[in-house]
Image 1: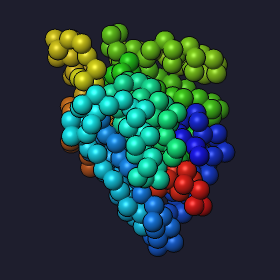
Image 2: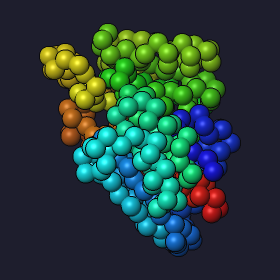
Image 3: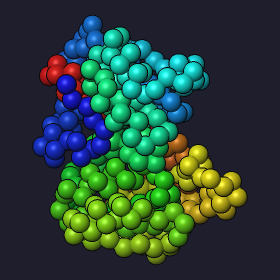
Length: 304
Ligand code: CP
């Protein structure tokens, strides 16, 4: 029994295997339509979600399995004070695998330590979001053919943006990667990610507040939302929320094959006028997330 709490729980070889399975699912969906018959996925979401929960559930249905869904902490016994550990032990009696989102960093790890079935971290506080990274990696692989030698711009809330932290961890294992970290001073990448991942792996990086000046060198531009729910102070959020708004004008000097990504939900960070640009990849990420979650469920349930 194995859980996935951090994207680094997967070796590069295992990541490549998941990418290959996801591509096979895309090409041969009928082959997988009944493979999880009789299995149940429990989605335990203690924080709001549209994509992650719905794509996990769609993934399990498309594999022929069933879903037990908890979309709201207020309607569970967590509201009466039940611990994450007891919740995990309880759900282990009903389901075969858990996908958990929680506002507290480390909660899915606690669940994994107490469950008797695999637990997948579906986002924990400002920490990690490994299955979003799986969606991101499949998108980059399909758009760029691979991961080596890419210049990756990460823009917006790099402090609280858990998708950014997970993506940097994943890409740090490939060669020739350069990170361009674009954020307001107050929302810079935490030093534990910069020191323990980027610097430790001797990766090239630059930090800037100016998106337009670095635009011409980017192969990937990963926009992020300023994470209102992680701020202690509403005035700070209001001051910073529109720090970066990507418009067609700002793409004037961008590469023709730039891949524009965003984990979504978007608030104001990308103008809807960009949605029809061939470089916009964010809705491809949404779909790719379902295929990668299908691949991950198959591997953790050991049905492949
Ligand atoms: N990308 C992402 O995690 O979206 P949701 O919050 O809608 O699940």
